[in-house]
Length: 154
Image 1 (cartoon, rainbow, N blue to C red):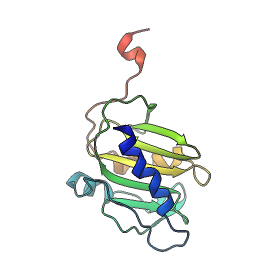
Image 2 (image 1 turned 180 degrees about the vertical axis):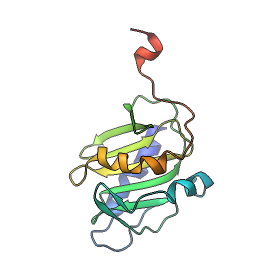
Image 3 (image 1 turned 30 degrees about the horizontal axis):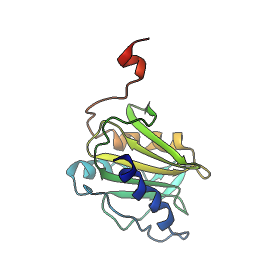
Image 4 (image 1 turned 60 degrees about the vertical axis):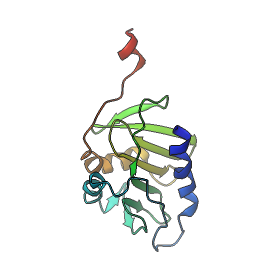
């Protein structure tokens, strides 16, 4: 299931053009979810110092030229995962780093899920996720990250 979530994400990086025109993206399956509209009206004009660009797909956003931060809302809830989970500014994120220096972050415990792709050679992932936390935080958390010690004890 996890491969299904991340495969389209990684393909998006190849679709981004190098000019300041519209960024061509694929919408997530549930991009028309009203909760995504709540997220999208709150995404900032700048993320980690990069200006927002126009995109051609519902519930998507991109920043930088070429785009170094891409957001898509409307992914399925990830459920439990073996990926590292961490909390930043009250939002739990799963981190997929197999394509380093390109990282994929997916919200954990929020429905619909939000995916953020970051080119870490151009921008700080920490700064980008922090800048997006107010918008993404509008999605009500259903569960939170836990550590093995939270479940199993010491």
